[in-house]
Amino acid sequence: KDMPLEIVLKHLNINELYRLSWGAKNTHGEAWVKMKADFDARLETMTKDALRFKWLKPQGVYGYFACQAAGDDLIIYEDGTGKKELTRFNFPRQPYDDHLALSDYYASVESGQMDVVALQVVTVGQEASDKFDKMQAANDYTEAYFTHGLAVQAAEATANYLHEHIRKELGLDEKQGKRYSWGYPAIPELEDHFKVFKLLPAVESELGMSLSVSGQLIPEQSTAAIIVHHPQAKYYSVGESRVEQLMR
Image (cartoon, rainbow, N blue to C red):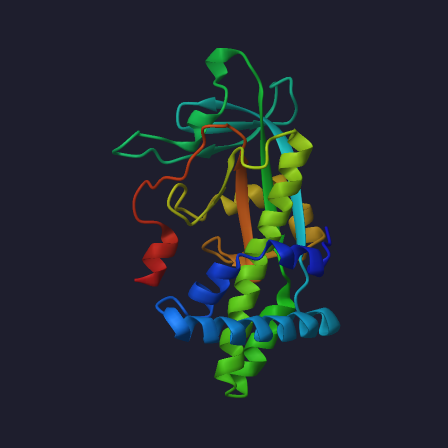
């Protein structure tokens, strides 16, 4: 459940933090060198503050489930016998390119083989959102901006950390497989979060997380994902995602 912040932050994607979340996307040359030095110092200060006051609390829950593919569906079973179906995920298929759906990466019902799928949910806790809200209320918009950016990337680092752990448990190479989150190009709809929460009840009971009526994760700085272990898994798009729609 709980993960050590100092170790999780080693999984930060510094380039995404600085260039995307902290706004240095179009900064280059000497200006970038100076800004990076400023950001390095800021990150060190904010990390110490987060460790001291515990406003970043990396936590996660994951589970393995027996599964088989049936067309565009991934059937989740209670156990490896395949006698009891718990739920099924219906994945959209690309209307172009390779016509992929995530279910393609799993053994089919027709094959007679049972496969395994991992699901994970992570968060850095409500405290990060509370800190951001307080800064906004105090008109401290600059610090609120940097706090929000770090919290978002810390949640992603937590997901990376847990994904790495799952890879090791499955005996996979460090680069094998991919992690797909709902609301993004390959699986754009958020409604499947409700199924994930039912399959992983500790997300609510242990992490204290919840879902909005539209399936968005609460707290905000959280992610849910399906881990695909297939060695040929790749990222792709099936059209405009829910995240892209919200950003329009």
